[in-house]
Image 1 (cartoon, rainbow, N blue to C red):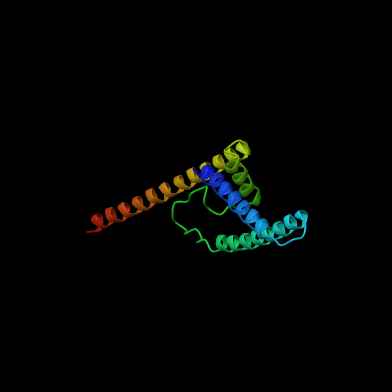
Image 2 (image 1 turned 90 degrees about the vertical axis):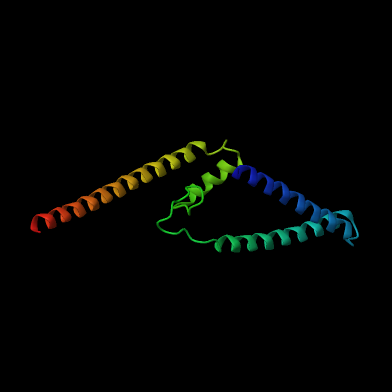
Length: 142
């Protein structure tokens, strides 16, 4: 799903920038064809840079993960840049590039989640045992 969305986004982006480029090329008042191409290309690059800065600002505005909620390994903030790069290559290539590194990260997260679950179960068992022990003591005293 994410790979498909990325590919559609890339296709739409190429189409829109191409449309902008050729629209500016058609409207150009340059004396020669090479000058018209350079002028159109400069304008599209300027628009691309401005769009990139705007999208970067939008990404920084995403909500932070809330502690205590279930985490989605694919959406949470990644602890190291290499992980983000591996995710990007994995999804953009449709799972062909970075599969081994991606699988290692998933396995690492699975082990962490399993240990966290075991710790929570132990805490719940300990809490329920201490609660039942306290009620037994009250009955003996009473």
